Image (cartoon, rainbow, N blue to C red; front, side, top):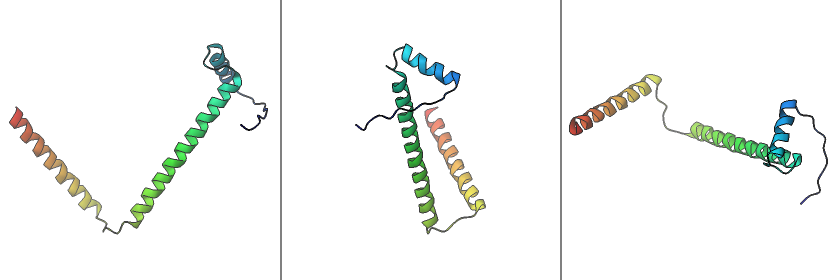
Length: 99
């Protein structure tokens, strides 16, 4: 474990109240433990954010590298409408069989 370094921080009154409440209700043993937990949570959040960004970048890169031909928006809408019509027809058939 690396040696601790003492820092002085300034927080809002609401944050100070929250920190004291966490110690007073036994959730944490000290103010330092509350701050440590908050910093660990921040670190996890930043790591998860970096992972999401990396995933988005990878999907964008894969999309840009996709050699399949693009279709027009009219064709995409026509395909969606066709799929929805087929789903509706299948749903009606199931209702008639079970109904």
